[in-house]
Amino acid sequence: MNTTAATILKLLFQSPMTDEDIGEYIKIEKAGIYKNICLINDLLEKYNFKKIEKIQKEYKMLLTRNEREKFYDKIEFLSLDEKIDYLYIKFLHIGILNLEEEKKILDVSRSTITRTFKEVKEIFDGNGSKIEYLHGKGMKLVKISELEKREFCVKIMKFLMMEGFYSNPLKNLIEEITSIEIEERFRKINEIFKKNEILFNFPSFFFCYALEIGAHKFGKFKLFETNLDFIPCELIENENKFCLEYKSMLNNLIYRLKIKEDWTEKETILKVEKLYKKIKEKIDIDYIDPKTKEMLIYNIYLGLFKKEKNILKIKKVNMKETDQFLTNEINILIKDLDIELYRSDMLILTQIIKKIIIENKLKKINVLILINELTINHYFKLLHDLKKRYPTANLKIDAFYFYKLNGIQNFTDYHLVIGEDELEIQNYKKTNINLFSLNEIQDVIDNYAIEKTFYNFKRKNK
Image (cartoon, rainbow, N blue to C red; front, side):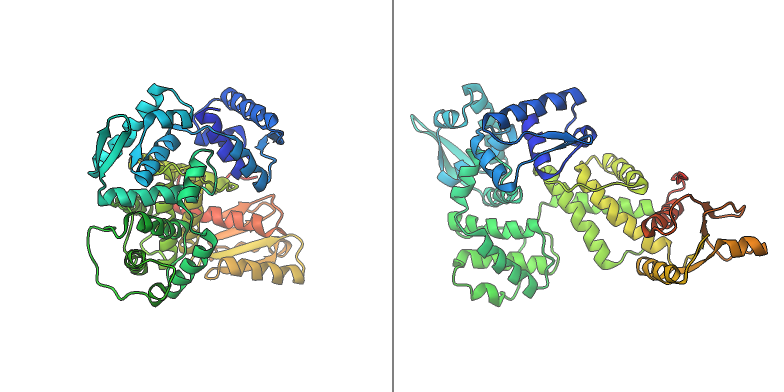
């Protein structure tokens, strides 16, 4: 297996994908995708697993989660990034590294292991750690910086977030290091988060979990450049399974999460702030609801973090016309800022931005919906459902024939009129949508909000 095939495998284990979907994550031609799918299928067939099938233009992995884990147990291949992380984590875990032995374990050439370790050494040098060569034994870590100890936890967190999407021998190494039961820690850390009114998210949880592993390995170490005064959390202090060093560092981290003090790399936080500012300028909205703002900022951070740490964890989102348009606009912004995001994370940002636009641009909007055949039951049901989505809008539903029969043309009080037949008035949207369909009516209203925000967006009449 090669790195491209391994990446496609990770993608398909998470979601069915078309050639175009895969191409968004891996810059590869359609023929190259087919070639690598065949390579994966040969491997699946070799170990008697169900092969990938193409169903309605989408490649689909047919293995269950349990079968996936068994298949990964058969694979020895690691990508370049995984080899670097493997050597980095193992070196810190053991303290001594023999490249000849690692060459055999990873089943690579001497030149490959040398090039890979060069990348690892550059990380250590950049963090201020020191390596000493021992004749006949390999390399020994003679100084481990505080930054290195923190990075060790971040790399453990990275692989925990991937939830088993890695093959041997990295899997065996992670399992050896993470001896603490994750389910048990999940319950305890979740309880601590709730007690301190902290929004639960997986990076924070897995960092708390990885921090305990770091505390057992290195004792207490410096997590942050600045010190803050805080009152220790009782749940942490009273937990007898936590060592003293872990309690001290976890208290520090939890307090920062509670006061929304960023715990990640400064460079990432600066990128988050820049992108948030650019998005706010782009949609020309001064006020964003605090909870929605927190959601947007968190998802920007999560997207950047995943991209920078090569965590290919995706969530497929079905796109509408407005989603595609907004995704393209976000793509322009991130290119201007010289940052990158996975497409799935851009789509998640798109959903949040669309929510912000709809909430702001449709405040007190007057909408008239004209339906040819209107029953009283349909009227109340449709009005009720639309009010739930647009609580501040003034919505009116009426029979189209009534307006047509009486020649009523006074529509100046409406920002938007939606109907099935022709009317020559401003802001009128003639559609052939099913006006009994809530989703289709919502699309028209949502698109109006996007048009109000982006003058270059034009809704295509269906």
